[in-house]
Amino acid sequence: MRLLLIARPFVFHGGVERATAGLVEALVAAGVEVHLLSPPGQQPVPGVTLHRLPLPPLPSAARALALAVGARLVVARRSWDVVQSHERTLAQDVYRAGEGCHRAYLASRGAPAARGVYHRVVLALERRVFARTREIVAIARRGAREIGELHGVGAERLSVVYNGVDLARFHPRHRAAWRGPARDEAGVPRAAPVLLFVGSGFERKGLGTALEALAALPDRASRLVVVGKGEPGPWRRAAERLGVAGRVAWLGPRPDPERWYAAADLVVLPSRYEPFGQVHLEALAAGVPVVGSREAGGAELIEDGVNGAVVDPRDAQALARAVGRLRALPADELEAAARRSAEPYTYARQVAGYASVYRRLGAATPDFP
Image (cartoon, rainbow, N blue to C red; front, side):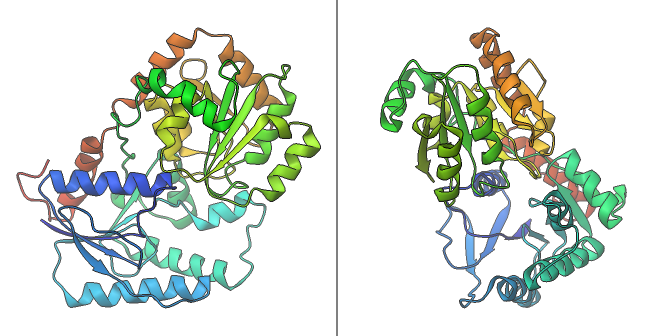
């Protein structure tokens, strides 16, 4: 089967990009002839034919349109069995709604009406994608409900295929080797209780709530380690106002998130809007319980009091109480439960989910997984 996959470049600091890279590798391993269409910046991928989509420097709204139009022109020039897009483009057979619904995202910010050219362009592209694409793939049940309710997509062309995770890269065994050295690097005491926040886009991922929860904890030994891409200035000032500036380590984007899971006792991710959140899977695979948000698709993996907790992302007191409840439980049992909950989410399982979608299109060969 010849698959054209349209996706942004894979970069080291994003969970979305790590998830896409893992899927591409698994598709190649399954025997799919993968062609990747990507804007500038994509590095070669073993076993994949790379097609570069040149985009000049443009404002964000114009760039979104240029990507959609440019991808359509490329699709029209060649013959593919399936065209699968992870971006809002115009000529795909399958659309993976990895970013959820822009309409729902705006509502999560208290801005249900589109303001500004960029938002109007994205909403228009989104409406066309959901109306005209033969198969829509959500990455969690929550996202599927949004797509069905907000865009009228029926169950007959709407699937849920969860992300996979690298179960070897993210594993509890790394804790023994990396926990102490990683804490030393971050300037965190080896004996301190450590909360880890991983995410790019600090406001949407709920960093403000995480800082408030740190301040609300009854102890003063706890530390918060922040890993991700974003402008830390406003959040550093917030930490100062809350009196926790000396208890927060700002590490920026890192290529080695597995080291920081190994250093942590709990992951906190009170996202305001999150179609899934690869951090949930990575942390659980690493044996780290997650205090997640009820607004995140990844919360579907969390069983409260077993491998984490789920809270209102705007309620710092609830987040602090959840941290306290989990700290009172046996750490080894939490670690084991977290790992077990991630183990079914392999890339092979993800490929099998897409194989079912491709079969409905009449494209998957009989020997496809």
